[in-house]
Each structure stands twice: as structure tokens, then as C-alpha cells.
Length: 458
Image (cartoon, rainbow, N blue to C red; front, side):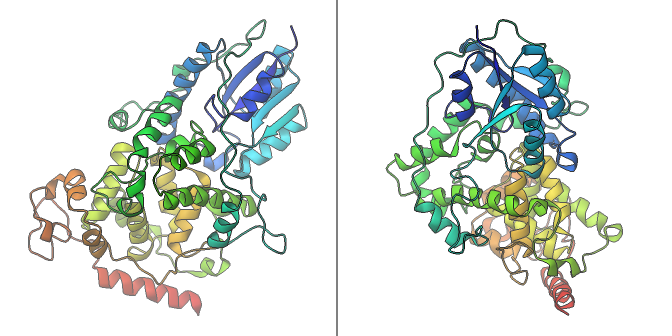
């Protein structure tokens, strides 16, 4: 039998439309491996919610591999060292993997390539960074012209089916046991609500796509309404690579609905990855240097406000509903994410990086590119961002997007209030005793934010 090849899996946990798997299977016996590497990402090691998802996704992937005559090898440690060790143990000289664009993965790919024959394939995005360029050959920094350029190359390639069979090596290398990794929370188990909302894995992702197809035509308007099921909820499946963006694009296009708005959200995902490719520190540094001079509140004095925001106890029902949904399910409605982020940054004048790190730990779809670019978009510090001076009014947003039932679901203290007062019970004299007062008035928060902006502008 020919020597085996390694299939290095990361955020690409699927068998269908998996270019690295197809290439590896075409060469001979395949050893699929996932390495839990908390060293290489440094401060960006996976947060708690992502680890919950990973546990279940890996379990489903192993089941799928076994159905194809293969299995998943699990190792824990530095990915470069573990791949070299696996190559030595198995006799494999070549590694197949999909490109990843987070800065730590790009560094790891270079290091692996110095020791092994690393073959990298596209497939995590609609188009790899640099596939479309500006007129002078540069990388796009503004979303709208980037989106137009990408649309000229759409649709993406037709997705490839999973191999019918994956050849196994003569001898399997040793593997860790998934349960020994301790990815699931205990003492306490704060993820008890996750299982009711999510089914990680490739099949779960495809089932979610099928469920969304019937609603895709209404996405343009329904996506902004937290009280209705108007979003796709496919972000964690995309982040972990359980479905490919090409597969999703073709399923949406074939649905018969005009889903252009949703397809542009897939392009935004590509755009975010282009930004971290061009500016790897997007998650920790302002993309616009001017914002280095913005006088954020000192966390020694702002800590209690930050804690209230995290716990959903700000006195602003739409913000509190979103933060409680996040803690319970590992996910938050996209419109509410913007409202909650804007409230932290502008009403509370807390550095966007504190909020981004909280989302990183609590979101099942925590994605370095999307999370970083979206937070900097709200803060106004991104390369293509909302103006800092455009300050969302959470009470107005709540009423405008009919969030009453959403608030009732996630803030049960307010469940008995009528639609006309639930968005701002305090000003209507209807605040229950067990619900907090506003931690800052809207006007006061707005004026403080604008004063900080004026200080930054000098």
C-alpha cells in the first residue's frame, strides 16, 4: 500500500466540498487529524462557547468518517510539532489542508511547510483574499466596491460531493479521546440551553440550510426583526466549516427566492477575511490610528457598568434581552448585536476590545475576522465603518424593529408589560421592582460619547 497522507483539519469540519480531503483521498490512504492547539493562537485560543460547539462537531465528524471507512485522529499540543510527530509515526510525508487566514494559522502554515510537504487548498471562502483587486492592484478596503467585484465572479464553483470511501492506512496512529479534552463546561454547566438551539456538525448545518430556504425570500426585511425567525442562524456552521460558502450560495440561488441581500452577507464574510489578511492585528488594534486617542473610560471605574452589560442588567430592555440570549444560547440576533455593541462603546464609553473579547468567549460563532471587523465597524475605528457620531438609540431601535416579544422571551421580568411600554418601562412608570433602572440616561450617554469624540479630534 502507498504511504499515507495527513489531512489537517481546523475550521473545515466537513466531508462534502472539502478540497483538501478530495486531494488527499486521490493520493492514497488518508489520516484525518484535528489538533487542539491552544498555544499557536495565543490570546485567540477558542473561548468557552466555541469549545462546546467543537466537541459536538468533532464527534459528528468522526461518525461521518467512520461511515466512509476512516476515522478522526485527535491530538493536543502545538500543531507544528504534532503534525511532525504524526508524519514520523505514520510514514506520511505530505499534508493536505485548507487555507486559513487568521494570523496565527498563516504563521503555522509557514512553519509546517518548512518541515513537511504542505499542500494548501481553497474552500473556506467564496474567493481567497487577493482574487479580486482594485484598479491599481491593491486589496479592497471598502466593502461596496469589493462586493461588486466579487459578484462578477459569482456563482462560485459547484460544490463537490464527499468521497464514497476513504482509504485507511495499514496502521492508525494513537489518538486522544475527545471526552478527555474537557471541552464541555462543568461546575456549573452553563451550556444547558445550547443543545435546544443547535445541532453542530455537517448534517446539522445542512438541515439548517434546508430550513432557511423557505424563509430566504423574506430575509431582507425579517432579518432586522428580533421577534421573528428571520435570520439564517448559519454563522457557526460556516465558522467551523461544516458547510462551505459555495454549497450555501448554490442552495440559496436554487431556492427560487430573490436572496441577494443574504448572498451579500456571504460576501461580507469574505470582506472581513480580506481585512484580517491585510491587517492581521484587527482584533486588538484600531484600524484607524486616530482612535488610539479616544479617551475611553478607565475600567477601574467602568467595571460595574461592564458587568451590568454582560449580565443583561443595564435597564435598556433590548440590550438586556440580547445579552441574556447570548449567555443562554451562545448566539445573539444580528440587529441586537449592533445595538448591544453600540451601547457598550458609546453609551458606556467602554473600549470596543472589551466587548469583542466577551463575544469571543460567549459566541458559538466567534470568528476572528467577523467579530473583529464588526466591532470596529460599530466603533467607527475600522477601515470601512459606521461613523462614531452615529449613535444608536436603543429604545427607538427596539420599538422600530418590533422587539416586544423578543424582550418578553429573554427578560421575563417584563413579560407582562404591553407593547407600548415594554421598550422603555422606566419612563412610563411601569418598571417592575426586580428590573434595574437605566445605568445611564440616553442623552447623558450620547453627550459623553460626543465629547470624547471631540477630544479625540482635538
